[in-house]
Each structure stands twice: as C-alpha cells, then as structure tokens.
Length: 121
Image (cartoon, rainbow, N blue to C red; front, side):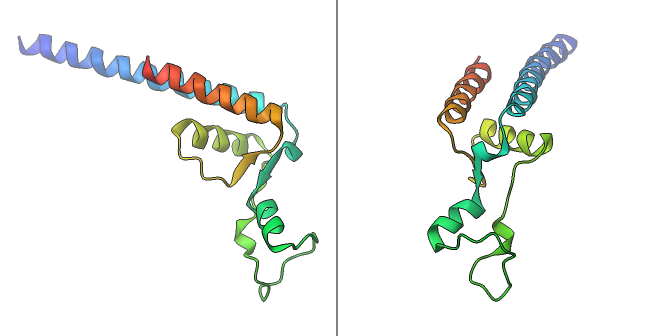
C-alpha cells in the first residue's frame, strides 16, 4: 500500500515537472522570437526617466546630477530577452524593460495568454 502511495506521489510530481518544462520551453521560444525585434522597440527605465526629468542629452550622467545612473537598462542580447520573457511569464513585470511598439505589445499580450493557458492546464 505504501509503495502505491509513493508511485502516485511520484507521478503527480512528474506531471507538475512536465508543466514546468513546458513553461520553460515557452519562455525560451518567446526569447528567441524576441530576437527578431530591434532594440528600439523596447524602452527602459532610462527613457522613462528622461521623459520625466526632461534630460534628453545622451552624455554621461554625472554623479552630482539628480538622475540615477543605475536605472539604465537596455535589451541587447538573448539573455536580456530571456529575462524579459521570464519576468513577464511569472507575472512580476518589473517595468525595467517595456515593449514600446504596438506589434510588440500585441505579441507580449499573446505570450501572456499562452502562458496562462499552459499553466492552468
């Protein structure tokens, strides 16, 4: 009897792990799809802060300025796109990387619906 309970528990865990691997595959696939989009279709905290403070120059920000230099985030490589996909899929959505164009916002929305569908399955 104890052996049957252990087998059922292992099958239950395997089913949950299969869902995890499915979610990981979706996140990785979305990360590779995001490589199609150029960097200027994403915006980050620096762009948002420039709009708020009105500081439009691209010169190096001095430490004495009122703008924090730690807020700069660009999406340049596959890891950054993986990070964006992971944060979006988990539902945290830090806001340090934000889709700027309509087509990227639409793709991101479809990605969220796809993730919800596979995690609720």
